[in-house]
Amino acid sequence: MASIPPPGASPHRAASPEVGPDAPDPAGLRRSYQTGRLETDQLAATWVEQFARWFADATTPGAGIPEANATIFATASGDGRPSARTVLLKDFDQRGFVIYTNYTSRKGQEAAENPFGSLVFPWYALERQVVAIGTVERVSRVETERYFASRPRGSQLGAWVSHQSQIIESRDVLAAREAELAARWPAGTPVPTPPFWGGLRLMPDTVEFWQGRTNRLHDRLRYRRASAADRWIVERLSP
Image (cartoon, rainbow, N blue to C red; front, side):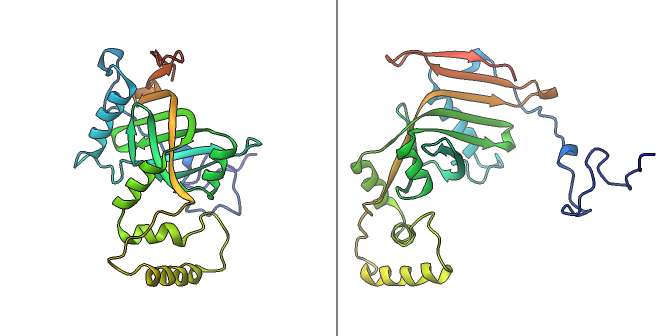
C-alpha cells in the first residue's frame, strides 16, 4: 500500500534526505498571468523601437523592477558548453545591445571562441520578457573609453582589481590589490581604461517579445532578420 505523504508535503515528489521538509515544492508554485496582451498591431515598426517602449515601461517608478537593465547573458565555449550570468545592459540601438566586461573573463573568452550569444530580460513584475539571439562582437575602443570615463572612480578601479573568473585565495587578495591601485591613481587622477576590458555588442538576428497570458497561452511575437539587407519580419510563435 502506498504511503500517504504528511500534511504540507508534495504529493508528487519523492522524499529525499537532501531536501528538507520545509523546502517548498517548486511544482506547486503557480501564478496566472493576466496583466496584459500583445498583438501584432501593437508593435513598433522596428525591434529597437519596441524594446525602447518596453524598457521605458520597465524603468517607470512603480513598475516593481529594481534593475530593468539587468539581463541574462548566455554564451558557449568553442566546444559548445554553455554558460550564463546576469549582467547590466549599458547601451542599445539599431546595431544591438551592449554590455561591458573583462575580456579575459569566461564570457569574454567564450564570445571570442564562439561569437554567438543570447540575452534575456526577465521583467517578471510586468509579466514580460525579451529574448535576443545573435552574434557577438567587441565594441570600438572609442566607445569603450567613453563609457569607462563615465563610470564612478570605484568602478574604474574595480575593473583593474578583478582578474574576472580566475580563482583567488580569499577576498583579501582583492582588498590588497584595490589599495595598491588606489595609491597608484589617487583621487583626482584619471584612471586609464584597462586594455583587457571593454564592451561586447550582441547584434540580434531575432528579438522576441513575450507577454504572459492566462492558461500559459502566452503572446510571443518575434522580429526576425530576413536578409543581409537588414529586412525584418514579424512572426507569432506558439507558446
